[in-house]
Amino acid sequence: DQQVKQNSPSLSVQEGRISILNCDYTNSMFDYFLWYKKYPAEGPTFLISISSIKDKNEDGRFTVFLNKSAKHLSLHIVPSQPGDSAVYFCAASESGTYKYIFGTGTRLKVLA
Amino acid sequence: DAGITQSPRHKVTETGTPVTLRCHQTENHRYMYWYRQDPGHGLRLIHYSYGVKDTDKGEVSDGYSVSRSKTEDFLLTLESATSSQTSVYFCATGPQSSLGGYTFGSGTRLTVV
Image 1 (tube, one colour):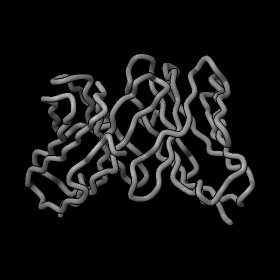
Image 2: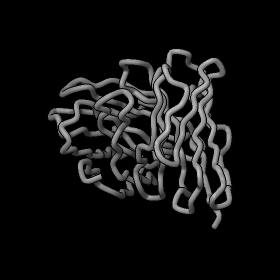
Image 3: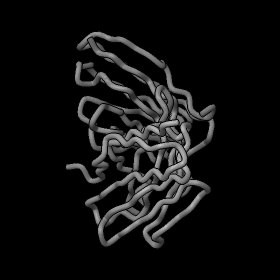
């Protein structure tokens, strides 16, 4: 039973345009949500997070939006750059568990 | 990340043999985790530890055991390796806060033949 789902395995975007990566979850007890970026042959690196008390968090070119009623979050990258080409994972956890459940990942390709 | 070292980086082993993967951290983080990454499955939690000698099972713990005798070391053992355990294994530490996220190691690519 996949509690965190990323339904788009891949996404291609032109350089300079917006990239939107989506994530859905089923567990209403999830309170914290993270996005990670992963390059080939490297470990995932933390990108941005959001708690359930907020609906938006912004860090430079990266913005995460949370819609709790829809159990949906998204990551916006504006403007997209070729160096953003990577696999992006969303992850979710319940408060106090310090244990994150990850989605299956979306491979983003930014075309120059 | 220089604070987390996984060893070995690559290993090929035969079906039925025991295998131990090591994760060493210099961050003094309380929490440590083992994940495996497989195509179509993303990252799945195998086992985690919330302190020395305190461990618990994750989503896919069957066939794996762990030990943590020191804060800095977290060992993952495949008691009798099977081909279905061919994967990339990642160790992670943290988080310092629920919104801080983990720090991941560079991974161990394990092939069971």
